Image (cartoon, rainbow, N blue to C red; front, side, top):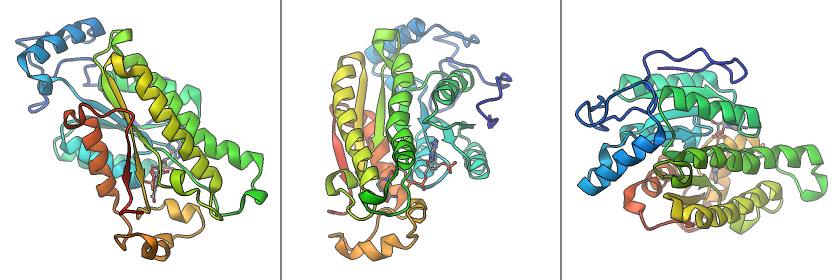
Length: 309
Ligand SMILES: NC(=O)c1ccc[n+]([C@@H]2O[C@H](COP(=O)([O-])OP(=O)(O)OC[C@H]3O[C@@H](n4cnc5c(N)ncnc54)[C@H](OP(=O)(O)O)[C@@H]3O)[C@@H](O)[C@H]2O)c1
């Protein structure tokens, strides 16, 4: 289903969706033997259900709900697509690319998956609150957050940057990641009656390299994401939540056009030890791994996906 109204339009209840219901991740059908599929089930009941399934070794039966911020294009879209293929119900958040978000949701639903598209600026607190409330209603509480929404601006030296630009870059890349993590923790943390979950933040190789003469502001914002990942991982580790980051190198997406150099991957690839740019899908696979039980002992990790750069 598509729930793509602007965040400012208060809620028409999405139809045909049962929030918080226990769902078999393979069949996507409610499992009536174990939990009644009522319209809303308090989280402590789901926690008890989780304990039963952990004891049975059947954690795979729990409903997996993923939100990908900035999921309409690039790495976010590849992650949403792969997440749906791996059994997640997916919320594709976007800021303005409505057609792209709708088309991705349609593709997932046509393939038998569950997805919604929700507009919202992650740097705007009311939008973030409304985003997570919409997911609660339409899909159930989030179990996986991908803090992917990110922006950079035209390449320039630091001496030409003004405060408005710095505010915009920090709002999406840093404030947005904090606000989305806050809303996710309120739903995932065992401290708040949740079932646990996982968060992956999109940092960048820029946090190590500094992006001199291009966008030091963006690189510094990603440095903040590295520190945020380490600190938050330690803060919530005992509450069932793992927090990791990926640090992509030069990936072939539209973000480079926003910097004023659509062909940047071609120019920079010679400096990459693997001699090529990366694909969005290569980053998405690493994100899905960090979210999965395969990475069950990884938290606070910063995973470079950069062809050796
Ligand atoms: N591509 C690379 O080389 C590279 C390298 C390292 C790290 N990264 C990081 O990877 C992430 C994804 O990058 P990408 O290359 O896939 O970028 P992209 O192709 O430019 O896509 C950016 C996505 O973020 C969304 N977005 C931007 N600002 C937003 C906001 N305030 N609120 C909600 N959504 C917002 C966009 O939505 P709309 O379409 O609606 O505007 C779009 O879906 C970013 O965090 C980026 O910094 C990318």
